[in-house]
Image (cartoon, rainbow over all chains, first blue to last red; front, side):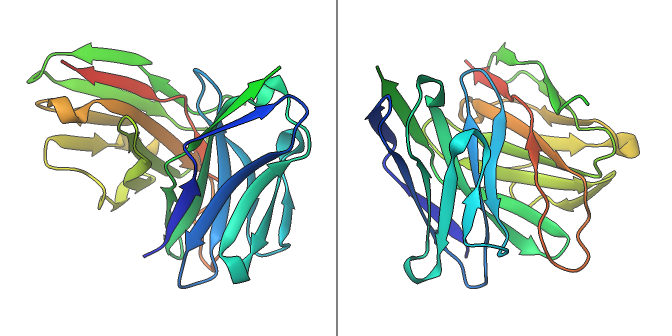
Length: 115
Length: 118
């Protein structure tokens, strides 16, 4: 079964530091992978998605993620953290038959940014 | 263009009562999904509509949960009778495409309804 694992329920960084949020997937077929972000009191917002077009995917707000098949990873990075990046981040994989897909999520990682 | 909206944003009910959650997808989106996040755990799929038809309800916990999407527009999720373990945040998402030849479509999420069962 396809699944994702997010390492670390909480990650703390200082403003201006590198952000690295880890996601590993398990899939028997080439996966479609997503990162979503949830800001306080808001819904899930798509940051970026991997659909096999390119292994390095750029998203909104300066985030990017690299698909590494050999490591079954899709880690999310941002070179310099901003206070506004404080939120909860979810990695997800799309599963299902063609036309009928659902998302399987990781447990989420809460990013804390300190001044 | 309006995003996915959900109502209410919060609901607090007693065990045994009934609650109905509503989701309005993005206009023109045929696919509508319900997910749930129980506190401290991952967001889990409940079911998927294509227009008014249920395509996959494999994630529905039990028969106390009833989802409808009459007319293929908005959807409701009714919990009757509610139990303590039903507490959590219920998310609705919608996507536009019905995929015929592979690929994937982006799901757009609403803000969720936080349900508390006392």
